[in-house]
Image (cartoon, rainbow, N blue to C red):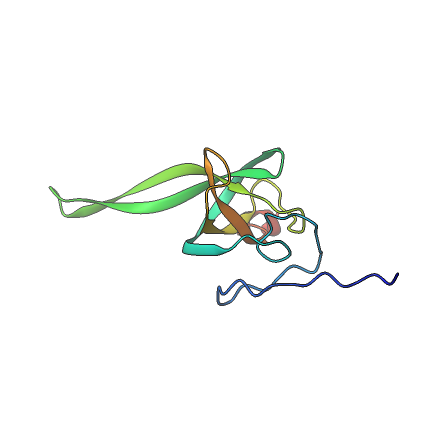
Amino acid sequence: MAKTKNKVRNIGVPGIEPPEETCEDSRCPFHGNLPVRGRVVEGIVQSTKMHRTISYEMNYLSLVKKYSRFERRRSQKLAHLPPCIDVKAGDIVTVAECRPLSKNVSSVVIASRPSETATEE
């Protein structure tokens, strides 16, 4: 039998290209059957020690009404990491919301790029 090429799905997020690698993960938005929806955010990878899961940090601004000023805040969240996307700590990842995959994971990594500080060194 001839090997069939793994189909790559269009996930509907503009500016996001599918990775060159292929994978057999059913929870991959490009090669599996996981639909993405809702928010698309960027964050910095903090840890990749979990199995197919990363911890990333989101920085955002929050309005303090009393002073009519903004303050910087950050939060750590978890996201599913498909095997076709190569990520290490310090990289900048684009994460899309999806259905709940576990108790704490409701998003999936759709793209990554090396951080600016890592490339300057």
